[in-house]
Amino acid sequence: MISRMSHSVAPTIASASLRSTVVAPRRAWSRAIALGCCQIALLALGCGGDSGAPAPPAAPARIVVTSAWRDGATIPVRFTCSGAGARPPVAWRGVPRGARELVLVVTDPDAPGGRFVHWTAYGIAPDARSVPRRVREGRNSAGKTGWTPPCPPKGDRPHRYVFALYALGRRSGLAAGAEPDRVIGALRGALARGAMTGRFGRR
Image 1 (cartoon, one colour):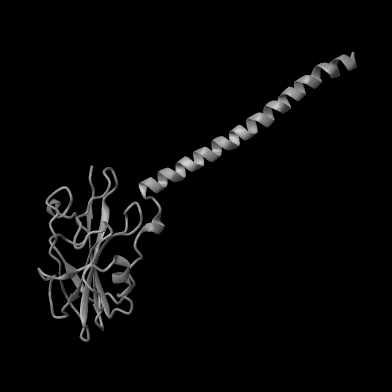
Image 2 (tube, rainbow, N blue to C red):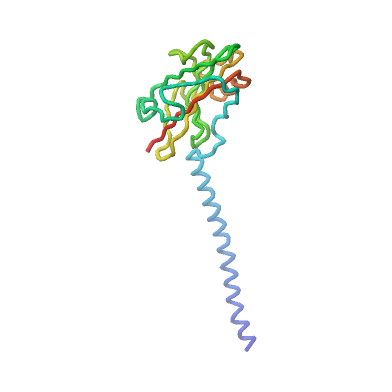
């Protein structure tokens, strides 16, 4: 009786063992494929923070920056991709003595692919009180020279757009069309800084 039972149980155990050896690799392959698809999707969406521009350096906050909206308020549509995409006016006060050049950097720290540079303007005279109509500009993260308007993905929470002005104690030596990283690198050792923020989102 016992020998017949052992013979009948043995095939069952063997078949179960065979099924587990077949299913396990299938599950491993499924996990690998799913992981690969997720990685591809993340790359396509630009979700990795490492691809963005470096953060501008810290400096004493002495300069007061203003524009066409209150600090922290919503950016008017005419300055965004939902409107004309016009370059916004930027003014300031409080530039310290000893400044040799002013540099403006506008960034979106909430961009899906990391910090996105919307505008760099430099070579600005230290006695200027606003961005001149004609100013030396660098390339932005969209690969174009000059201003590129806020245009966050639809459905995102409103992004922050930081307008930061730096006072340098030396001339940057930056040529027109400089890459964002070079402009940000030239800000090290700035005498003073001032910033204001605008917000914008698309439904």
